[in-house]
Image 1 (tube, rainbow, N blue to C red):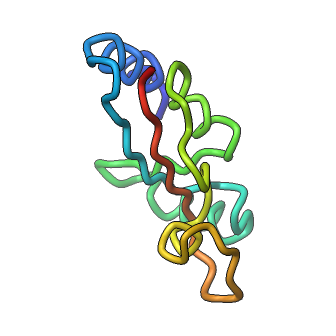
Image 2 (image 1 turned 180 degrees about the vertical axis):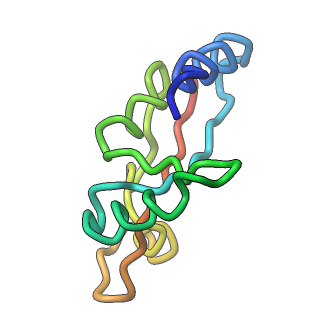
Length: 101
């Protein structure tokens, strides 16, 4: 999955951007529902495209060089509810917006 070095790809993209540009990223998190995500990864092993879930710490690395905007790298409900953590449905992914300074 990381053979193409996606972090380096995003870094090259970042280096081509002007100050004030934003990176908006939504990514499946393997640590959100560990058992379910491991099962989903196994299902996709033989597929032409892998599932590609990553732990939160690895997803956060995509924002290197960007200032992560409020409410940070969090679930989509927190973005929709203006940063307020809700008891709504949990999602196995994280969303973030970073601004290049």
